[in-house]
Amino acid sequence: MSKGTVGISEFKAAAGPVRGSRGPMIDLLVGTHSRRIFGVVVFFLLLEFVTSLELVPAIYLPRASSVVQRIIELLQELKFLQHVGATLYAWAIGLALATVMSVTVGIIIGSSNLAYRMMTPVIEFVRPIPSVALIPLGILLWGQGLSMKVILVAYATLWPILYNTVYGVHDVDPIAVQTARSFGLGRLSILRHITLPSAAPFIFTGIRVSASIGLIVVVGAELLASADIGIGSFILFVSSSGGHMDSVLAGAAVGGLLGVLINSLLGAIERRAFAWRYMGTDAQ
Amino acid sequence: MSLPGTAARANAMTPEWRNRMLTVRGLRHAYSADRLAIAELGFQVNSGEFVAIVGPSGCGKTTLLKLLAGLLKPSAGSIYLQDRIVSAVPEGLAMVFQEYNRSLLPWLRVRANVELPLRYQAINAPERNARVARSLQAVGLAAFERLYPWQLSGGMQQRVAIARALAYQPKILLMDEPFASVDAQTRADLEDVVAKVRMQFGITILLVTHDIDEAVYLADRVIVLSSSPSRIVAQIPVEMPHPRDQITTRASDNFVAIRSEVAKLIRRPAEEATL
Image (cartoon, rainbow over all chains, first blue to last red; front, side):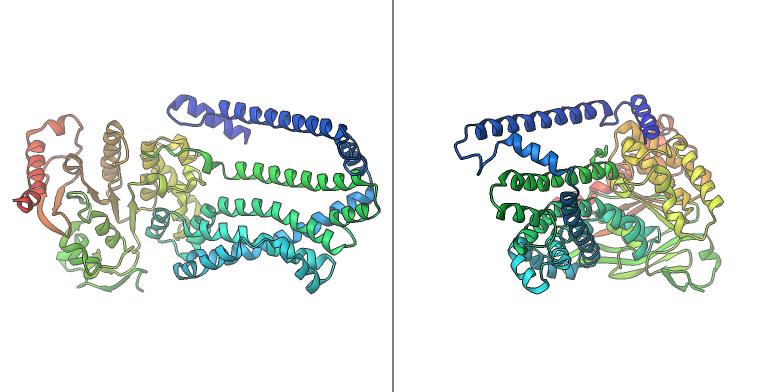
């Protein structure tokens, strides 16, 4: 990668008019990075100040710093890490299932004009139903275990991926397709070489959006179902015994941290794999 | 065995057919009952010939190319590539579009873009590599094969599209306003690239353009179309020797005379309509 980058910047320096030099981009990234950290610090200090006023007794609303301390303790406990692992496991299987199904169905709907016109209203209707509302139904149908969590995550994460796949496939550039056709490529080769690569960034965005939704649903399901294991069941357990509000909030915060980590990881992959989308073409 | 996209053979290679690359007869195309794009077209392009089709904008030039490439089905009439009827996308035909940035694949490097169509041909890897190298060389982009299209200027991107078509070794190359999206200097450079590779590879070219100068400068014959629904107004041979030169050819009396003749022909139907 670094080798290629050097070659590119050399060429750009030589050719001049090509847009998007590396330097300012790195500045921008570093800039937003430090600004983000600054924002987090300010927010934490604010929380610490408010909680230290003890407007609410500390037993109900502990100090921000004691929650942070509890997070650090928890992350060193094997039992808690098993909870985190169980949550991530259900989340990953559910998301993987949803991805496979949505991408397959999305390609079919997106490549057929008739299916596209028939299915988009359905998708638009079902998509905004909050998946969390279906958790009680899921518990009723599939109990408290892994399969309930996986099915609920899969259902919740299906829609954004399906939606993005359908639109990504449907909006593939007709000129690119005509070019391929004129060179004698068949339907499957066009799907492989034109449609899928050009829809891939959309599909990936769908996966990234779904990843966060899936995390909310899996923790919520664990909480409502009083599952044996998972971040949600940990939160339920410590809250039911009373006087452990720091643990409750720490558990919730770890869930949030997972979300941030997953999102930035996927975002980084996205920027790297689909760099071509962010580069200006010099057309007209 | 019949090639894909072609069906019935015409009268097997009579002398009349031997030299013919493209034959269009009674071609008509309507998008709908009240949208007639092409009224009636009939013309031929001989093997090795460079024909330019000019006409006022919106006269159905792009529709014509899509019909020729088998991307659209005509409402009536027939198209022959050599002696075979075109019924679907025929073999041995390549196309260069005006929108190079949409026609090239941004996720593939220059080299892979040029190579992609060849991967679906019965060509072994060494031959494929040789063809890619030769065509990139011909358009002056040999040093840029590892870059992505979006790292290149517009003119260079269009060269990649031309190289991709050359590597395919088509019998006929169709070009749809290939230089309409670039600046004047780049345009002249690209014209000369096309003129050069045409001699070098000996291919037949059908160029569609709204630019009269360009048509006369490049072609052996200019076909003038009327405004939509299109018909042929005239066919004008361009009898000037090759290679031509941007400065001297364009300044020659012959060039100026043909140029103004074509310009008059294009303007005439519009004037008649307004009178």
